[in-house]
Amino acid sequence: MASKQAEKKKDATGGKAARGTDGAERVFIFDTTLRDGEQSPGCSMNLEEKLQVAHVLEEMGVDVIEAGFPIASKGDFEAVQAVAAAVKASRVAGLARATRKDIDRAAEALKGAATPRIHTFISTSPLHMKFKLQMEPEDVHQAVVDSVGHARNLCDDVEWSPEDGTRTEHDFLCRCVESAIKAGAGTINIPDTVGYTIPEEFHALIAMLKNRVPNIDKAVISVHCHNDLGLGVANSLAAVQAGARQVECTVNGIGERAGNAAMEEVVMALRTRHDAMPYTTGVKTEMITKASRLVSTITGFSVQPNKAIVGANAFAHESGIHQDGMLKNAETYEIMTPESVGLSRSTLVMGKHSGRHAFKSKLEELGFSLNDNEIQDAFLRFKDLADAKKDVYDEDIIALVDDAVLRHNDRLRFVSLQVVCGSKGPQTAELEMEIDGAAKTAKAEGNGPVDATFAAISQLFPHTASLQLYQVHAVTEGTDAQAEVTVRLEEAGKTVNGQGADHDTLVASARAYINALNKLLVKREKTAPQVMSA
Ligand code: KIV
Ligand code: ZN
Image (cartoon, rainbow, N blue to C red; front, top):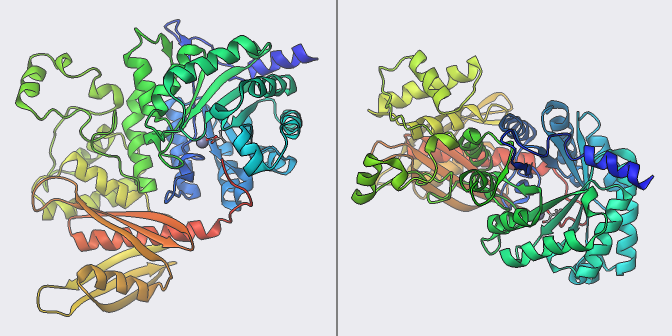
């Protein structure tokens, strides 16, 4: 029985070749942007947004998409259900604690998936067992056996994680891993939950498991590294070199606290340093930029300019010496090409004479795949912008499309804004909005034009949320640059970020505030589970 189960477990690792087309050993990419990523403070995605991200992840060749934590809320359950129904090429995973209720709920949400995976976990470190779970190690071990066994009865593909794995005693870790595999887990994921480990130590931990757990060859070893010390990617790669064959990661590295290992960094490190790490992934790296922008827009988490792979400066060469070298041979200062991550070198600038056709080609070149209505909406916004701004750059178009297209499910919509401002007060804002389809207008005074604008929004849509952050940044250079505004709101301990872009800073501010309120409405629908610590 045990060996039959083991054979089945091997299939459950993806049914995909363990080698890539180049013969190199395959590393499976398990993306948890929609689960661990969405747990970042201030980050929330509605169902439609989660589906958009899931489609891009599927298209880019991610092996497993962790779509959420079904027991956490009705919204999470429905999102996992929707992703499970929509995604066919990637496995879809749902997270569950080690209880029958959690596991049943995950199985229920994953019912429609072509290839479902239940990911169940329990803490195994002395600290977590004593203070968080208040359970004896023996009882935790029994919960491992019971939870994995129960999950395996409901789903062929089960992954098990010992939470706080890197601070777990080795003997106990080995015992739990062995029992989880015996009970039916096909993937054993070792989380560095608190981002505490360092590469050499993590390499040794994976090697230790490979040496000491007798049935370890019946499962795929996975790793899940948080980035509290900035070592998430380095630790993941060290683990791969020790024998891990699945890496859990998120787009742009979003996730709890300092985030998770960034998917784009793991994938590009394996691709660029294939000489030192002869492993391959199934990810189409040319889609990295598109995925990064989508996640950044939806979550409102901007990517720092110097962020590896996807930062605005990642392929920019400012100094004269570097530019000179680049002109002679790009390899002098470029270890990977911009094209390999989906950036084009084209600098085609658009202006008010550019037509719909050129605009459409530009959108395609930038990696957007929009339907006709979306293209039309974006084109109208582009025309307005081109009237106000001589040259429209790629960055402008990206900001504009993100703003125009990704908001079509919102309950609150910006329509127009007229502001009176200057040194002779009072500053006033006259705002028109649509709320659930009905047009509404308000006029408000404030301590400055931004305050007046936000007061007008509050008049039309009264709320108790408080403003935590108001940030403006110019998308390009020059005084006619578009403004991209981020607004952070907090209500009853829940934080959301909204973004808005426009060549008028106040309009961008109103759009950002309204976007944040829309996200808050989505958040309100969610109810917190009793103990949530993944
Ligand atoms: O960080 C963690 O330990 C987790 C587990 C649920 C894998 O997210
Ligand atoms: Zn995590």
